[in-house]
Length: 350
Image (spheres, rainbow, N blue to C red):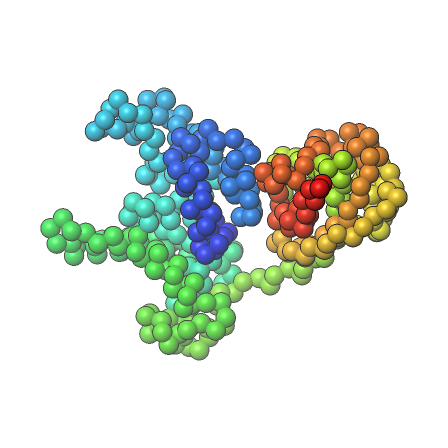
């Protein structure tokens, strides 16, 4: 959940997730609908599908007789243990070098490096690395520095340990680097006077804070416009599921089409998408949001038409006609979730 998402955003999702799917086994056997609904709003839904694949692989390893899964205290109890070595963690779906390093160092206090945006900013400023950290050689250099720091922490911890009392140096070092970048060594207006390592910092000592890190300029934002249609027929609404292999795959959405040079109006868009021109199209709401470098505007329109029910089977496959109560149980991308929330349940007949 913390990949590409802030901690404050993650917390309520984490708490809800742990109530619903607290174990590896429960995640492995959960339905796609359940995991997508629990993840709804976090974005990058490939992450949750990979997380489930990882749980299924861990269980498959236990069934193959992997000794690392054995419960020595209660050998008759089937348990599923998350792997603890860096190679085993890296082998799981959806886990790359940074995530594996974070897991092994923070959870298991192993000398594995991490390198995220915050740590890159800290290291380039402290060591005065002026090259672009996204370039292969510079990135490798940063990984080497991060590895040396966490290795030194582990060695120093072993040398200073008293008896069996060992400080979790690897865990604390990596967390400290991330926190330093998040709270002190920020992209703009860093709080250098509060920084515990400012006297060792090349950028601070040479008054060149704004020169690091040397990142490429962000690409110019691209505006995109969509028309979405909330089609109602006899109390049911038309929705479709996004296919595999696209952004927000497997989530549900209202029928929509991008407005390019043609069509560029709601009526023409409705005909191209739904196969007919509705007699009446009512504006419902406008949603603005950002995905990577795209600035997206979605104009939602509402129409009530039995013609859509006849045409949808040919034009929108797969699709469903569902009442609001069932729509709210499906997982939607954030923009379409806002459209859904703008709909009011039908008034009860007196």
